[in-house]
Every structure is written in structure tokens, then in C-alpha cells.
Image 1 (cartoon, one colour):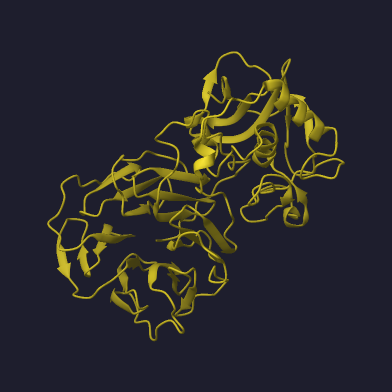
Image 2 (cartoon, rainbow, N blue to C red; image 1 turned 90 degrees about the vertical axis):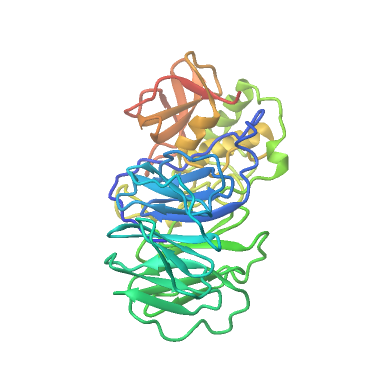
Length: 423
């Protein structure tokens, strides 16, 4: 699972959406997560049911609607491959290669990686599948395949932490010390490799830097994947959609959904949403805030519970120096999440980005108070969100250096047509 550096300027791409009411059955619950892939600014979670969840700058390009074993992003980050256990795969976005015909395999595919020649797969028994479908039996049990930075070789990683290199993949001496659960995934980081155990333990080998692990956390489901979104960090994903970031990798959301969040509920009245948004804007005391102006903080409001939090400087592109990590507040999507949580009585905004939100909300031509207004280049490239309060006005967290405030609806460029609301 390789890191992809994607140069882009983000206004904001964090927001997710009400998953009901009532939630489409194909959206809730998200199902068990099978794999994770990343770029510098976001990541994708691929469910075993074939659905893909996109976060940060990672865009949703489609999904097959059938079981998935692995996901691998293209070099540009503008596409990905979704791989089935039978060796078939399909490309989305600028991932043009696909193989629809299953292969005759003795064991299921467990990993995928991208080299200079295309997409390489490995099965649980160590059989390596070349882009042209050629099978090479390596005759060793493995859990993942990781390409070198040159794309001229790969490592095969075993559940015991053993590693074998092929092509220009240098030999990695030693195995993880004090291994208490099987290794489930690996990713390249700098000159070395990072291995992740099912219990959340992380092992940095061959010159890779250790930034922390989830081994001390009580996990609801085992870890299933690790990826490096930045040169100085890595991200773990668990089977229930939980995401844990370390080092310079930034948290963009997760796919954890409880059955409670999927039950149909009456939409909150628009007047209640507006009332709450105005109360926050006016600095009143509300749950999660003791009163006073609420500052903008890049990444703020994306903690385990809705409401203000310290932000992050990871992938920050605003005025320098960045002070988001010492600013207690919300960004635009954190603000919308907070407002909707207070209006609905529970966290109805999940972890997907704004593109994912548009797939779940109903678009209306005429706006009504309490709707969400989106900004960006297109419905697949949204950058900002605000709460519409009527009469051509919005309440939003606009940018670094501001507080929650009321603005004209066209305060930001690229307003998308229509208004978006819970069904």
C-alpha cells in the first residue's frame, strides 16, 4: 500500500453527511472494511462489500458492488483499482487497466501493489500475479505485497513478520520483536517498511521511522491495513472502519457506523438547525462550548465526538505560520457536523468527505433554512460547506483567522447549484 504525493490546494474537503433519514440501505451500515489506500491529503477505505469511502482530498470514482479484497491507488491519486479475492480487478478514475475474468487460484488474493509495469497481486499462499496474469509460485504464506519506491521490485510479507525481497527490493534482516498478534498489512515508508499487527501494534523496519501504534487501545475490531499518506507518518484502519493516524498523517474521518445511526428518524426542523447555528455564531453557551466566539481551526471538530477540538497542521494550506494545532475550534465541516448533532440529538454527520455527502443528500432547487450549501469545482470536487439560514445568508467557519460568522451566500467562489438536505 504505497503513499502517493498529490499537490493540491485544499479549501476544505472534510465534511460528511447525514446517513439518513431514512438511510439508503446500501449506505448504512458501511459493512466490514477490507483495505485502505492513501494519497498526500486523504485516504480511501474499501469495504468487503465493494463500497468505497473517500476522505480528505481522496475522491470517489466508483465501486463494483461486489466483494473486494484490496484497493490500490494510481500514481496520480486520480484513480484506484479494486481487487477481488479471485484475482479479477477493475480500475476507476485514471486506473485504466481491468481484468474481469477470475483466475484459477489455489488461495485468495490478500494484497495488491503498483509497480512501473502495473498492478501486482499476491495470494495467501505466496503466488504472485503479474499485470498480464502470469502466476509465479513463491511457496510461502504471505499477507501483503509492497512495491519498492522505484517500482522495479517488491517485498512479500508474512504473518510472522518475515520479509522477502524480489527485484530491487533489498533484503530486510530480522523480524518484529515481541509479536503478539499476526501481521496483517505492510507499507513502504522512507527507506524501509512499516508492518501492522491485528492488535494495532506497529513495527518499523529497515530504516523506517516509528511514530506510534494502536496496541494500547481497546479495539472494537482488529486492524486490517496500514498505509503511509505522508513521508513522516502512517495510518491504520480497523475492520469496523476505525482510523488511527500517526506522525504527519492527518485524521480525515472514519467509517464507523452504529446500528443506532442507521435507524430512520424525523428530520430536524430547519428552524431548529438555524437557531443552533445562530446561537453558536453569537457566542452563546451550547453543549460542547462554554461561550464566546468560536475560532476557525483547520481540522477542528473532527474528533470522536462532534464539537470544537484542537485542529491539525497536517495538509494545512492557509496563511503561515500554521496555528491550527493550538487553536481550539472548528473548520467548516466540523461546524456543520456540530450543528446537525445538536439539532438531531446524535452525530448524523459521518466521516466521509463532501463528495460522499452529496451522494447521500437530496438536492433541491429552492433553498430552505437549515439546508447545506456546498462550494467547489464540481459535485465530485467540493471544497467548502455552510449552513443556509435564509434570505441569501449563510453561517459558516470560513477560513483561518475568522470565527463562526454570518455571510452572504456567495462569500466564497464556486458555489454549487442547489441546496442539500436530509431526505
